Length: 386
Image 1 (cartoon, rainbow, N blue to C red):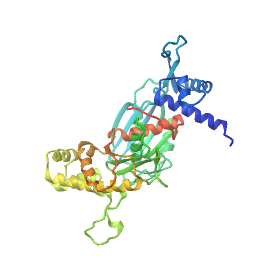
Image 2: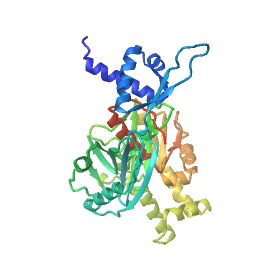
Image 3: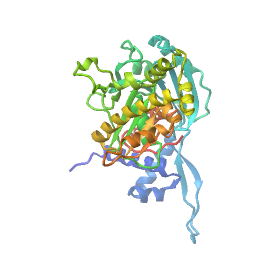
Image 4: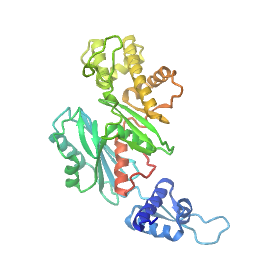
């Protein structure tokens, strides 16, 4: 079989850079041993990475015990190569997170939008970028990611229930204005990428269930994001909820998991129960902690339907672990215990755990995709930090 030299060279460069990112600082000899390339090839690749400033030299390390020879030069990943800007757009707000090139947070900001038109949203996003300080890095802005509550296919928004994007080309708009790669992805998918990439534990198969204004699930299979044929995999908010007490009705008349049990829907139910139109999530959490019977019953109903959806995901994907990304569950971790108890009838239930970072998970997942894009490392495991 004939192997293209350029393809092999690219593979070797990615292997060396990934080793430095994930396990550095390292000497050239250590890199050679870990990736299985000869020292000449490794030295050449490291030299080019230094020249491009993806890695930096730490000078001489420690010589081997008993050795009188020259101490090896150590190199490590240059997290200050530049920065990424990562947005999350819901119906009510825009969040923006700037990160270094190892995923660590530089700046966070949020703007309320309350379902304003896309033209206003774009202006607010531009303003957020313009307000960023000088981070004093090697380079400036290198990539932008945008998380949306909707279906995304091949970097294009196909559908969103929260914002009318009016066929606006977000990728083209930001790419032309800032001259950097632009990535658009579903917010639940990005939360799954976060759980995969910001962990030293390598999980090949996982699911991240995101419950906010909308509901979705990000699915990782064989260490790669699974989005389905047209980006609709994990759209669990569209799952229908039948009423077993009624005769068969048209499927179009059945409520969905999202319409009944998103955060907005739960709070709306609580407003009716409490006969208080100003009742909010914080009040609901407080009442539950104070053992309010009405709110306890509401949360138990939520747990019941969440357990049903979780069981479907277990049956469909057989994940190693399921993460939950929701401010409600983060505030009331006993919800997961309730769901776990309801699933004891299953022969095997994977660990059900909270997201490692409910607040930033989606934004950091976007940062990971942005960093992978700039480094041309798509499909390569990089261990990032936050």
